[in-house]
Amino acid sequence: DLISRDDNLIPAPAAPQSDADNIMHLISRLASDPSIDIDRVERFMQMHAKAKAAEAETAYNEAMSAAQAEMGPVATDG
Image 1 (cartoon, helix red, strand yellow):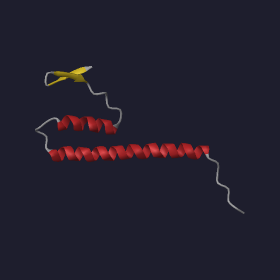
Image 2: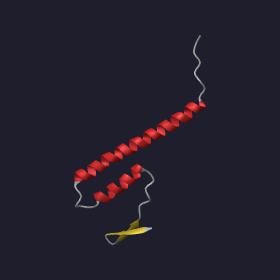
Image 3: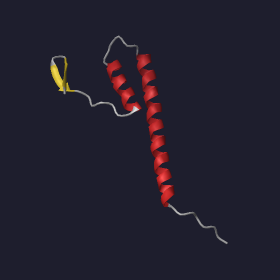
Image 4: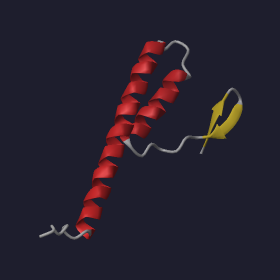
């Protein structure tokens, strides 16, 4: 799909896949609107950072859980 911007055709952005992607898509739309207050864009940037951190934490926890499932218990000396 192509969209028109300033009489130029550019590829349409891919559909957002995660909360962080949705927020970034919104930020890019807001940033292109000169009537939007920069403080509002900044608040959305903070929301994006929090969403990315939450996604990273979830990925870490899932990976750690999978790794621990593959490991045997640690034997104690004695």
